[in-house]
Image (cartoon, rainbow, N blue to C red; front, side, top):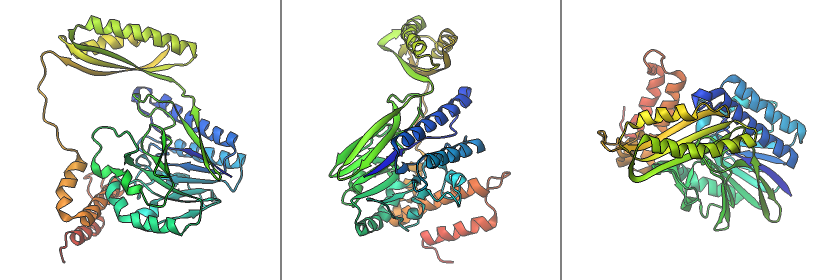
Length: 416
């Protein structure tokens, strides 16, 4: 029997909202420590992390040191043969500038970054006790990229005689995840693409809501995040313990959040209300939450969502509400999501297509293969700009730019 600790989307280094940035950074670390403690208590044989170990944009050197030390503590507490498999998520950085490299070490043979070679068409397959494991690191054009490497993954999994064949991905799966509105087609993989692949256990990062289900003899497991990434998240967070024997067994283990995070919803319906009505309704809910927070002896973060119609200035109401509710010592942060509509509606500008939608329309006439190459090249250019772009102009030097010009000419079929 093999026991695997599974988690994802730990976002170490995240410090949002900025008003309580360092407290939020601490909360993500405490959740990570709890996850490691659970894995130690359960005496797992392997660890799988399905991406977004870090929040690269706001992390600092101490965050990478923290993760490295926690993984080492796990190994020291269990067995030096324990292995940790990790794939890169979108918040870990790019293929060129990958934050996971900060926690690699030549002597840390237990730490395996999976899925980077897969993006190059060189499929990695790890053969372990009773399972084989492969994966694909994050790419913003996952739908197109997966189509180009799908058959190679299938061939590699077919060669394994392991009872369990595991595929790791950090992307949305249409047909498994409850997708947020507006996800572009190229950023989600259809569940049909994963059928008949040969994987009977598909573990997924990127979506922060946990979910596990069996579809056509394959288990789809999304562990979710370990801490509230967004204050609007509702479900409890935690990790999974996966036992692989003659049959698989899954257990969810809850992680206790550092702070109580709650949402107050005040909806005025179709009637036009005044500011006093909204404040009164919010205060009723607020007082009930304060009792709950004080009983648990914790500090609270409260999000207030206002919906409905108002004949006054909705932003003045927002200021009044913050003044009324924000003075309680049990609350470390109050956030107001103001969705109210004033009866005299302001001008609304037309929506503009996202960058991803624009690029898809622009390059679609090239055909699927060329489109995929073009989108991948754009990703490479963006990563290179971030890494070596001029601080003054934001542009690449001639030498760096030349290789991309050559690739564009190849994609467009232009000869020198």
